[in-house]
Structures are given as structure tokens and as C-alpha cells.
Length: 285
Image (cartoon, rainbow, N blue to C red; front, side):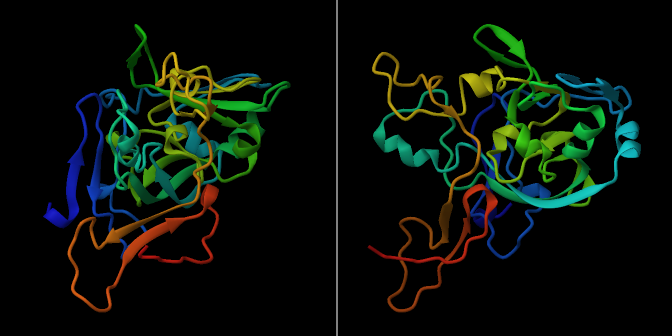
């Protein structure tokens, strides 16, 4: 890969890579440049043995194979952007160290053409039972935290799940999901942080409360007030959900010397929760 599209690898805990600079001349990110974020090694899953279990507060618990899932529901497609919760985290390092967090810059954002089935179709089929208010996704990877091993997971509001835009995806950019991107099945939650688009999906659980998974109850949260006893404890904060308004200049690069006169600036912008951006303003001060 050339220097202008080099691959950044942040650590060996899982597969965590991204390309920089982010190309601005293409809407859909090629798979080879699509960022990856995981907290454990990529699991090896036999698609013939794989099953999706749907349970919790549902009227008709169900188990699906890949073929059964494809036959049960009409195919759906969507072009959606995934954004890592750590986007631009490195800019916070001037405020102090962030132990245990990857120092992402502006690179972990990618847009894909996703195909699969609608989560809403599946939920209407199994029947949502009271008092369900949240839909939890649990992956088949094995993460270790606080002396326990478990699948990465998180939940979304039931309203978001039933809105019709959340996919249970089996394909990316016209091809089967690569292992690094969640093969054989992953959630794709447009407009929400990538941490809720759980990969290697094995369980969908309907519940009255948000997920108690470590990556929702202890991590990927926004702490409004710092706890002086433990500045890195964010468990009292709110879980990250919708992606906020953001924009990044891709070219010129930070610190790059440019000639006097007119300069062409390249970059990207996205609205809060995936809403359209109607205007951009650039200032040099």
C-alpha cells in the first residue's frame, strides 16, 4: 500500500487497522481500506454450524441457520457509514493519558454497501413481549475483561431496532462478509457508534434494561463529570449511542506546508445520527 493510503495497525489485542488519509473521491470504502476494530482475535466460525439465537422478552424464541434466515425474510440493502467510538481520540491526549484506549486519529470511519435482512422484520416475526425496551447483540468472539471471558456486546433502543434501518448483514460491498468484518453475520446500526454494530453475531436478546455487557456498562460511555477517585472510570456516564456531528480535513495534512495562493481542501463531514449536512464553513483562524 502506498504512503498516501498506508495501513495503520494500533495493537495486537485484536485486529485494529485503518487507512489514512481517508479517500474523499469515493463514497463507498473498498474492503481492503475499511477500518477494523476488535477486542479479541477474529473467531473462526463454520457457517454450516453457525446459528443465531433470538431470545429474552420475545413471544416466540427462535434459532436460525444462515439459510433459514435468508429464506425467512426479504433481502435488504443499505449504504451506511460506520464510525469507531474512538474517532479523533488522539486529540484528547493533550488533556492527559488515556490508558487502555487506542490513540485513533481521524481515520476509523468507513462507508459500505451492506446487504442482509431487516432486524425489524425478524422482531415482528418473533414478537416483542412486554416490558422489552432494548435489543442486545452478543458476538461469538471471546474477550477477556475483569477476569471473565465473554462475547463483545451492546444494545440499542427498541425504537431504533424497529425503525427498519438496522440490518443483520451477511454481505459487504457485494461480497460475503470477510472474517474481520463479522462473518457470517453482523449488526449494522446506521447513525450509531460502531460499537453497537456487533460482529460475529450469535445472540439477539430483548430486555427491559440496556445491556450489562462490559462494553456498554463499563466502556464506550460519555462521562460528563470526572470522578476524582478514578478519572478513567466512565461507568457512571451515558452509553454512547448516536454519532454526533463531525468533520475532518483530509488534505492538506496537519503540518503540511502549502504554497501561497488558492489551496484546495479535501475532507468529509457527517451529520448527527447520520442526518444530512446542509452547509460547511471553513475558517483558517
